[in-house]
Length: 255
Image (tube, rainbow, N blue to C red; front, side, top):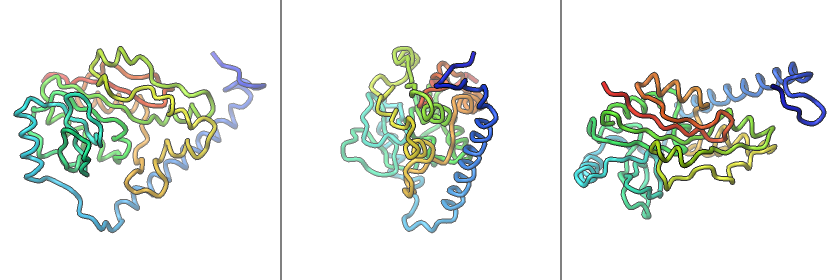
C-alpha cells in the first residue's frame, strides 16, 4: 500500500527519479567506503596497534574467576551491570575493563563467556573484520551464549532523511530476551538526521576526517540477521526495518 506525501504518491509518478537517485546515492556510498578502507589499509600509523598481551590475559582471568563472564565490546566508559568492558584505551571511570584490541580476543578463553554486547561498535569494522569478530565471538561463547547488538542502520538512516525518524521500540521485550536493561535504547536525540544532509552522512560514515570514528560497514537488519544465522546463531529478536538503529538479540545454537 502506497503512502501519500505532499502532492505526489511515493513510488508512483516519482518512481523512475527515485530509482535513479537512490542507486546513485548508494553507489556513491559504496565507492566512498571502498576508498576509506583502502586509505586505512595503506596509512602509515604512528602508534603501535594493540594485540594479544599477558596483562590482558591475566586481567580477564581475574574477572572470570570472580564470576564476571559478560563482555561489553568497545564499552568505553560505560558501566553496564555485570559486564566487563573491552576497549583499546583505558577509561578511568570504567569499573571493570580490559585494555586490548577487540580485533584480537585471543586473551579470552574458549567457551568462557555467557553474554557479548556491542553498542555502536561493529559499524567501525570492515566487512572482513566483522566476520572475523563474529567467528571469535562464537569461539569464546559458552553453549547457548547470548549476543546483543545495537548499531546504526543504513536502511533506517535513509528512511529517516525523507520521513519522520523511527526509533527502536519494544524495550521491555528486548530486555526479556537478554538486552542489557541499563543500555541506551530508543534515544530521541538520534533523530537529528531528518532532512539534514550532514547528519545523514554522519550516520552513514561516522565523523568526517576522524580516522578513529569511521564507519566502514553499511549494516541493515537483514544483513545482520543473515550474518548471525550463517555464523551459527539463532535470532531471538530484531528491531523494525525502518528504525534508525538495528537492535538484535541472538543465542549461540548448541552444537
